[in-house]
Length: 176
Image 1 (cartoon, one colour):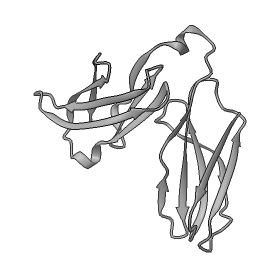
Image 2 (spheres, one colour; image 1 turned 45 degrees about the horizontal axis):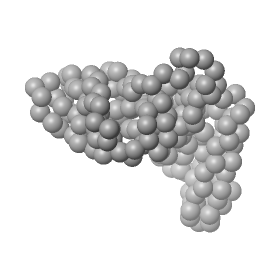
Image 3 (cartoon, rainbow, N blue to C red; image 1 turned 45 degrees about the vertical axis):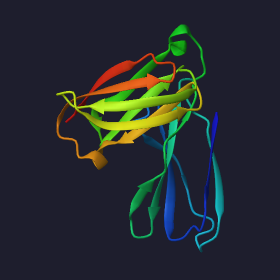
């Protein structure tokens, strides 16, 4: 099982919360709902148990809908996989949803060393268009880049990921 905890400061005008789970970090499905408890501007803390969590990595987010129907999402949180076989212990970096969906580039660091990583994105003619630094705090980590903020045109892109150790990884992705 996995316990999902979250808190809200000055909760107001919330209709409901939907807790969503994913096995790949991209495709989410609702697993539970929660009604607000301090909807008068107070602080609230919630805890939900996912008794059907997979033994592989699980990703979670909370979707919240206000009383006028507007929807927002929390950041995605990942719960590490339970190592049950050799394949789950592979060391790799993957891109989820390729071609990219919803304007987000999801990079999953599986069994990678903790530390600082530089992430650079290049267009098809080799021009650098994005550069970010991220600190990996555990060996299984999901990092999201909101590409819609960068107005990328449709096409092929290359992401180069360089840890502080200097061994580069290069991955290709498509923006539809």
